[in-house]
Length: 245
Image (cartoon, rainbow, N blue to C red):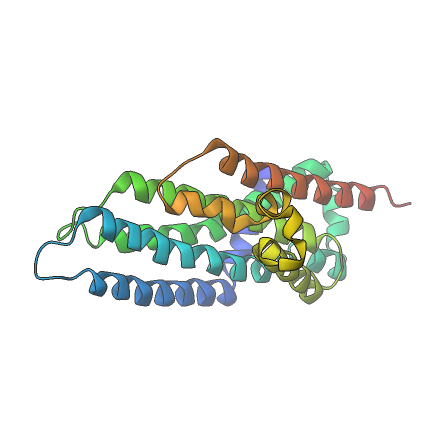
């Protein structure tokens, strides 16, 4: 049954014109930035491998992380809120599915299409293979970090969607929390906490090492732990819904 729900969510997103519009928009923006980076390193001699790879990871993959922040709340806002609004969730609650199975099917069904955005920067880098030598270990690290970003923001979108029956409100909440997490360590009035708690809570502080070619356990743990916490909170919301008289 979980696999059926997973396929249902994947089909729902893939059949949405909004999804393909966002994916095409991401591709166009990233391609434009990609061409700018390549142009900057297109010298008469062969471009050095490390600086070109560094530019691609910091600029293209870095922007891809910001675009994931923008796309995830829109595509996940109705994943629970829409069903609660339309009362179609009652059919799921009546099925032989636990809240954990429903959550798992919905989360993975949303994550797969969203994570396809991670393939865009890699595909652009592959286009350079005949003409430039790239550090593919570095690019693999950046891709892993981008997947972590999608894991986190999909979980955030699902949890936000479980808090309300209004999808636009769920998207606004997810955007607000994501932007807050982006700017936490840039608040001068919170200087006593700078470099400690606020740095840990800021998602792009954990994404940057991946863009620099470094895969570190604390950064991987951040994306997995925070996503797990958000999914646990969403599970609690679904469980409380099922406990209604």
